[in-house]
Length: 253
Image 1 (tube, rainbow, N blue to C red):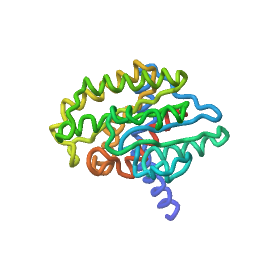
Image 2: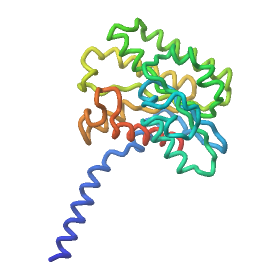
Image 3: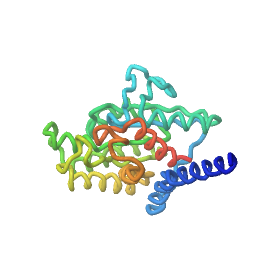
């Protein structure tokens, strides 16, 4: 009888795990990348990896700490989690990983600090997640930007980057939002979709790997509600940060 109960518990546990694994983040990402014909970034020995963006990337990092591979300097979000994964899986490569995201940034503000916070670091792999503030700050009345400004500023930033660092490998992350969770209401749509389309088009234009975060968060809500993955519709929870890190890590494996 005990063996039967153990077998039954084992079956239920496997069935539950099977349901949880029905949504595979690597499979979602791989399907999106194959649609674009993109390839994953190949890491090489002594590569410098740089995360750039706004508060989602910043995640409370200590900005006075200029070091690499350091939790204080990498923050508490997806960049730190992805960095930890890279450093553990690729110990032989001697990677140097930096996070220079700053809360509240829009594309033009990246450009204002780009020399110091990107070009002087000379990344071999550059990951950028930017765009939510370019839209969010517009609808809350603190910024008068447009989709055209976002698109043109982003292209100019990458052209400048490629001119200074012609061999840099780019990862463009899709700006995302989870509808119905606090800050993200009906005012966001359909206009926010244009910022996502622009990021995808820019990734294609600059031969960058594209991380489809919106699709990933949409799929994640089949496992748990949006508020589980983000507290305000924009900033990820701990689970959301891990979701992002897992998806990002798939672009370089």
